[in-house]
Amino acid sequence: MTERVEWDRLADFTAGLLDGTPDADEVGRLVANDPAWASAHAQLIEADALVRADLAALGDTAVAVPADVVARLEAALSEEAPAVRRTTVVSLDARRRRKRWAAVAAVAAGVVALGAFGIPALRSAVGSGSGNATYDSNAGAGAAAAPAPAGEGTSARDLTGPPFAPGGVVLAASGINYTADTLPGLVGKRSANEALGADAGATTGWSTAVPPELRRLTDPGARQVCLNAVTTAHGGRVVSVDYARFEGSPALVIVLVDAAGTPRRAVVTGPACGISNADIRYAATMR
Amino acid sequence: MADDRNDEELLRAHANGDARAFDALVRRHRDRLWAVALRTLGDREDAADALQDALLSAYRAAGRFRGDSAVTTWLHRIVVNACLDRVRRRQARPTVPLPDEAAAPYVDRDTAMDIRAALAQLPVEQRAALVLVDIHGYGVAEAAEILGVAEGTVKSRCARGRAKLAVLLGYLRGPDHVGNQPSDGRVPSGSTEEGTP
Image (cartoon, rainbow over all chains, first blue to last red; front, side, top):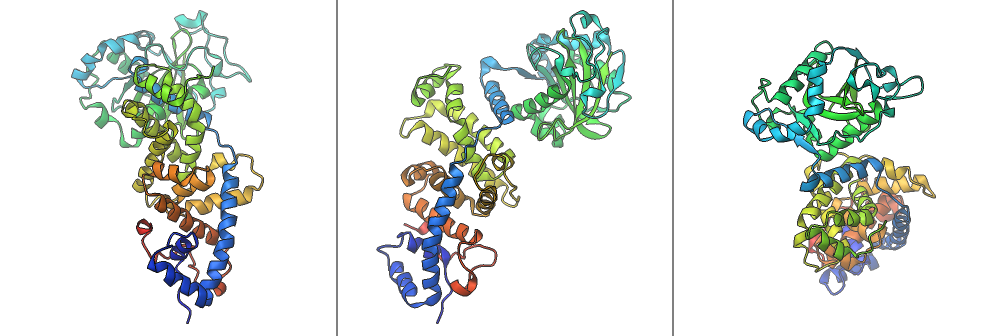
């Protein structure tokens, strides 16, 4: 009579792991007397060697950490180092806002610039193609320091400077539902309010104010991968990120400045930002 | 420029406030740690999350490293634990191919992909043991230390995992020859793995 082959048991037996136990005798009897067990045992010995060889060959294949993962790891570790903190969470809760005023002041130049210039006009560039939108080199006080307009075959990536504004990136969870029409005014107004410490209307804390779909992007590493993807596509430096909504959907509203610190673009990204690309939903160029 | 301090010196220096020491340690080992995470989890994003969690844990726990094991063993243990935690949290979520590794040069791409797909079907404990021992060449004793289990358990996980892979890769002939090979490639568990000596 043939008994059902128990592969785990047979594998242990074949590896000698049952030696010295009563079970070794029992499995040995099955292998000796049962054709199915005998066949399985013989095949398993041969197959074990083949599988080992396959796995060893897989191990011979070099695997390097992808560049985006390296960037993410480095960002997460630099966030961990107290002396190297580069981002500052700005809650709209009044108490926390007061505590963080000094940090906000560090980026006041960029933020106040938004209010000062009032984002006079935005030229929309829906989609992620940075080639559709160009910076106007004649706009704003920073025009003299700004590079030439991005032309055919030239992207906004030509803007120089580090990917993050000196002193950190202002983070907020305003709860605002931006639209293509209201984005210019609301971004300017909200940014100015933050810089002045005024009540922007939200009283919830940071963690509860972030839409659930965007929670992944509160992780410093994931956020930096996202912001890197955005600056790769649009150039400039990030000065603020609002975990908000755009036309009803959860979205990050990111403000970019040029090398002179002049606001140049507002970029709206979706929750998948940084996973495979920047997940850009809308972009508007300031002029 | 590469830091010529050994791993333990770097870890101690980091614990004592050397701002560059941990980065040097990570640069030295990150590819290998990434490969272990990627092959254990079978998913790029999960592997990135696990590696990030693990390195942050190591960063914070460096001061508690007692030197009972090599620093690399300690780092691997933290990475593997992060991987196992992640798998246990997403038990029902299917695995996907490994895009990065699939893009790496390999003498027989189809075979490599078959092996990765088959690995993804193993219970994660068996997969982790095979990744360490058969793929990365760790000895059973060190793998046991990394996994926090007895050496016999590592041997059993490897033996049973290889048997499953043999079925999945077609190295075992059909059911006519072996009686009752499970149709889904799963090995029936007649005994408990953890009870293996």
